[in-house]
Image (cartoon, rainbow over all chains, first blue to last red; front, top):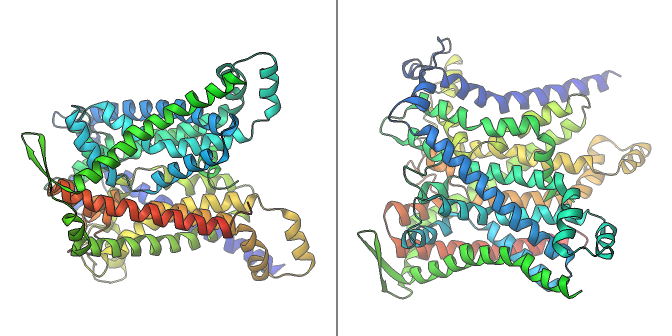
Length: 275
Length: 291
């Protein structure tokens, strides 16, 4: 009896410790965002909250943060739409259209190997080619790079979700004379909708968070949110308050998604790895 | 049936075109650049063939070697700690019922945040003058530590950030794995009077082995790619104590403008990691999943 009770206490103590360690840095940077630079540099724990950092990040003439936010939204949304379209078709193709097994193996292995390689190794040629084609510092360059980087995970997830669709559904559609596209759109897609949502959210977050490609393929006009935050941290004298405010604002999309679509996020994160 | 055959091709074509145009062609370009000297004149690249010499330089590059060694320490060291902590946290979480969703929500937060933001958080906390870690140490009368500016602590400090960032991912996959384990095996073990440790050793771990191996491989891949946190926290310093390969490539290619040489380094890293990945996957496939 007593030992069981002790065990329960230990479990809760462990979990609460874990939760504090996870939440503390979030709380700390959120607090920092409301501090003046002076109170930050003095390490004050008690302080009068100010919105000056948010004001500077969002509305000062020297800050492009709102434009960066728009750039991130455009790039993440576009690359997510491309991944969804291309990955859904490819996943349907390899799962249901009776390719020889070796084709499926080679294709999936190629995608997995590409996924295992650091993006920085490809950023060099992307930079050189996008300069040559006049695509440097344009949306298409980053969108295409992000779409391709996320394509393996997109295909992987969509294939996992499509495997769960009963074949009988499709066969019924075939017999009724539906073509491939009709079968996919009318029969398969409605069933895998939760899977598509999970894939979309995950790819969107990946693109929103991505830094090294955005750093090297964008300049002032197309820079994304992570690039902007890094700039605050890298300037001669680190603008800690602005950096913190920018960082806090950058987490909003993910927090909203976590709040409204946690099941889809968990599904997306676990589906590829655990069967 | 013929429409289905045609559909097979056009449904796969967009993915092949994208991979071909944005992955394979650039890799070809990368290989071409790696045997060239590339000069930039007014934004135009001028190429001159120089042969394999740049590859020899890569292998002799002291910064590259340090970067490779640090990357290995960073990836393996960080991932081992993450696996242990993540697994322990998942085990704890399976012991609670009503609060499980709340803990899961909290624990997965760091996975969703940009690496740059994680860097920003810890840049504030590690700061020598006003960082909260030194403030806490001061309460106990301990002298402040320059966590990121000291060669003795810098690498451990960035590994700690990675552990904070990615333990939640291990936790989530382990929790999903634990939740999907068959319960009757545990009942049988309990009937046989197995202790907690015996249950863990003879029931949980063997059943979880495939999930553990997949998570391990997954995490090591992402660990080897590390760039964002290093860029924000240390820039590879102090000295070369937190230099990692991604950062060395970035430095050589972009900061120093050594297009050809940076390409040769990229090719080495790209193919080495591709081969390592295929080897690791073959090994885990054979031991892990039954099929």
